[in-house]
Length: 419
Length: 215
Image 1 (cartoon, rainbow over the protein chains, first blue to last red):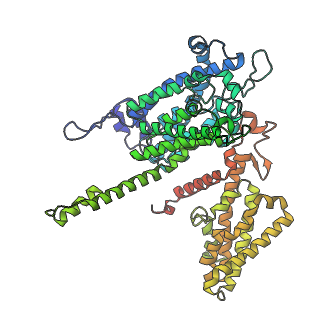
Image 2: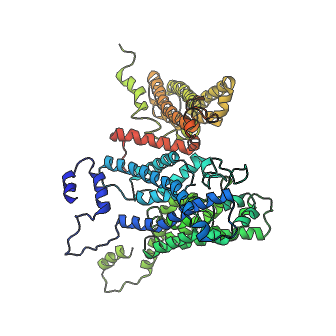
Image 3: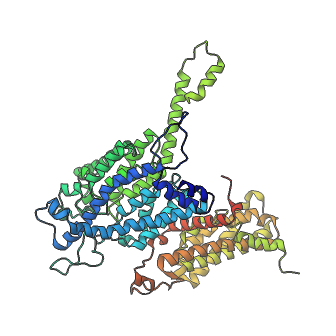
């Protein structure tokens, strides 16, 4: 392989070849053993692969849940739910496999084609950034998203969201969320409502023994219509936590997302500060809304009442908030870089997510919009954090007593270091 | 003798490509975003601006020696406002539906930076014929971009061109819609126009790298 690489060096398709080459093999151009080089095994590909490993349980779960939601919508939800008997069945898995896998394949296929085209045009290595994006995309769209729509959105997201800014590492917005936002604004009928979250509902599959078409409203959807009782009859808190609820493909299981998040934190890939502060932000906003309801400032017939009275901590286990916080907000490229900046950045993601969720008239979910908004603000936050630090150090320098024996020259030398 | 000298030809042709008011000077973006959801509205807007700019440049150029420089902006505003009101009234009289689509944006031609920019930069210092050509050229450059944006936004967003369905009927599911195609709602809203303008700028500059500004 290394010889082949040398042979094709400088040819037009070399970047395409090199991508496959280093995907499977360690490159032979490594630093030599002697000297002071710091050698890390965590290059970009390793980082990306770690995130994908954290996503695999979520993906597997989504296969089962797709089938479970589909069959439950047809036959009614089982009375005495047992995980082994009703959930982890071959039927569920098979249905999920044939509906979710095409999404994954299309997302990767189209995205990588775009990446390869750009790599060949620009004549540099194919960037690994799409490895994670390609896995995130199928997990954050409704299960019945038509494949051509997904392709259009992926082309848009990768080109406009990433390549125009210069590729992986240069993008302002998270590409996966750009793709989802594009789908949401371009094809709203396929991204919201009570027909898109369960496989087959859009095609008019009917319930067993009745002529009614199946529907699958998300919990947030019920709440937005002030139908709290309707979801409470179907799902309890453990359903919400473990993810046996309708929703986008991979967002439902807070439990597995939590495991993935812990894995990412312990492998030091994702920032725990962003995760923690985002949770705090969401809880804070939820508490404010609960407070508004308790104070009686909002009448029961208000269209915001259902979502406002929703207990603050439950916001974390329904909808895409957990998924967004763990896998999207922690994107090292588009998030804040400074430690204090991360706290601010994360807090506002949680805070704004819940706010949009409650006040969005079209669709009771706001995580992707909140994260995109904070992506835009992340460089500003970093700028002010750094400026603040510079100012603090300047003040410290002013107060500092310089010993008499230090000549003027020495003080001047010290200055740039302290700043 | 040719109708236009080479220098005069450039006055018309330059703004169409290498000195385009929208993609190179990035002026007049506001109206380019607001009214380009339909091709027809784009065309009407383009024609209106051609009218206002052609005549406006003539008038300003005629008056250039009598306008005191201290109050020239006010004088320019009066000229452009008069012309815009003429356009507005004509539209209201003969194309009422269209004038409702264009709504306030006909009136806002007054504040279109391209027009004031050409008055200031060209008509105040050049003869009548050349000013006229310059006005027409810049308005054409503006109009071309408007029509390109309008073409893509209407085709992708509504599946029609000038109101005629070209991709089939979305309700009866004919043409492309029979295969599950759907209109792209994103193209209807103004942010999509911003992205289309961005892509145009991108395409133009990669074809002609000399246009890329220093970072």
